[in-house]
Length: 426
Image (tube, rainbow, N blue to C red):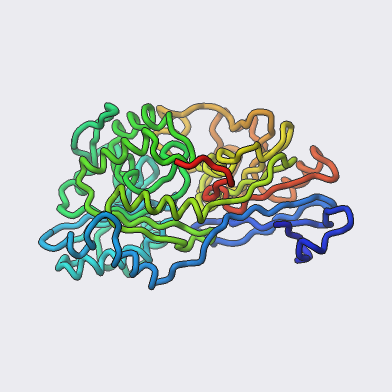
């Protein structure tokens, strides 16, 4: 799809096939203002907008239907009968899960089984990210849920108990409060992931509420052998094993749309429901992707709050049958960066799995457009080398200086949840 600031349809281009003042829109500012941001380019540039197939929001009726028709498991209210204490794991703001829409449905099922709100703990499965604050919980869950249930953060460095060991050799040490509950529920999202193929499912347990030692073993081991859009990887199998060891009772996984709504929802068994959700995700995220542009713009939305998530925007790049930008071209990574660098206790600067390298793509320049990111916040290796701009005007001026006239651009408005057409099936 070609777009322009004038709003002309694609059949109203100039005789040259390119239009003056072309522009394209990306999604920007997940969890802050979730807006459309127009990126304008120089006159004469050809701009191809490359949105995902996407899908409309399923609405409250769709949510109700997913809970009434679980996959591979009885309905949650049936599983919950006779149980006394429930723990609901919900992911943090580095994930697009609309907890304020999904957790009330979980609580309704628990209430129907006789479990009161006072006997429910909502546990933030932050893995190795920073703990969630009260404002974070308000965004993720809403005030009504916070008034009804206790909430807590998982801490990877303390409060975990041994559960077993996977066949891959990793120790499974999980959050004590989760393991002490007699009803264990996971609420998250299925989006592309570079090691497990897709996120969600059992990853909410391992590494979502695992110890630092477990998470390190996982990331040093099975996680090194996966790739985007291939779900049956060692990383996924290991997470599934850990979830079975933990006795996960029920899964609730959304498939987010480009507007951070729900294009799909699955509930049920932690493995069977997840795999059904993956098939929905493949359709929603499918993106026709032209190869060989001079400039390729990848938005990190809906994970664009922190720099440490920038690699997730490369999902379409990693799944494209041909390179999206030509040799000698430029990749622009766009993120709001409201949290600056971000936090990760394994991969952050100076942490034990810190690679210590500046961002690179072989044969192409990498440029960052990040209004909320200060150069001083970058990891030391990237601080001196990274091409970083706070305004789009500065970014496009740099691109124009390098590429000149008649430049071809492809724009991926929510790269983190886009899979280029031709991605390998599992």
